[in-house]
Image (cartoon, rainbow, N blue to C red; front, side, top):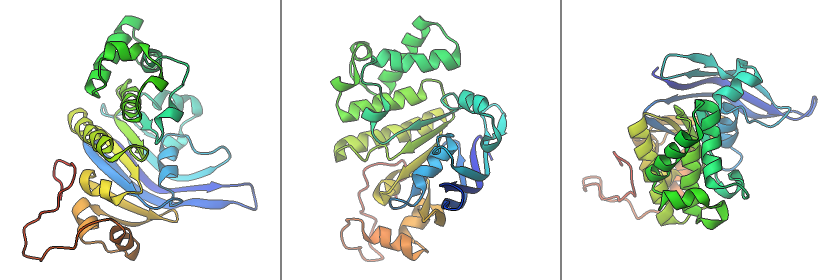
Length: 285
C-alpha cells in the first residue's frame, strides 16, 4: 500500500489478571494516504480506543496484540506495537498526530498559542525560534484563524470553540505528519462551525496527501466526508466498504439501524434524480 497505516488483528485488553476485559477483538483496517477513512460506531464500540492505540496512548496496563504497520512517505516502515517508548515518542507528533474531541482539554490554558504551536515543531524539526514562528503564522492562515499575528499572542480562553479546534488542527500539523487521527473533531461544535471544520479536513487530506482516520459516531458526517467507512460494534468490525456501499447498501443489521436513526426525508422514487443535499465532500453521494 502507499504510505499510511495498516492494522491487522489488533486486540486490546484492560484490567488486571483474572478480570481482564477485551476492548478490541481483532481489528483489520487500512488507512491509506490521500484518503479519509471513517471509523463509526456507538459509544463503547472501541473506535476511540483504536485511535489511541495507534498513537501509543492506550490506558496504562493495557495489553495490545496484532500489528499496526506504519509506512512513511519516504519508505520508512515499522510495526508501532514493537517500538520502544523512546522510538514511539519520536514518531508520535512527527509522523502520526491526533486531534481530540475537546480542544479546551487538549490545549494548555496558561500557555500562549505561539508556544503551543512552536514548541513541538522546534523539537521535531530542529528549527530556530524565528523559523518556527513563521511556520506557525502560515499554519494559522492555512486553517483560517483570523489575524494570525494577534492570535499567536493570545491564550485558549480568548477563542471560540470552532477557532480552538482549528488551532488544535494547526498544532497537529505543525511537524508535518503523514497520518492524522481525528477523534470526534466536531462533536462539541454547532452545525455551521462543524461543516467548516470538516471541509478543512477534506482540503488538508487532498492537498497534503494525508492519511486521515476520522473517528465519529455520526454516520451523517461519514456520508459527507469519508472515502471508506468501517463500522464497529463491541470491539469488532461489522462492516467495511466505500462510502456509497455502506450508506446506501448496508449489509449489517447494526449498520442499517444506525442509518435508520439518522434524520432524513422519505426516500425518493428509485428513478428520481439524486437530490440529497450533503454539506460537503468532494464526491458526496
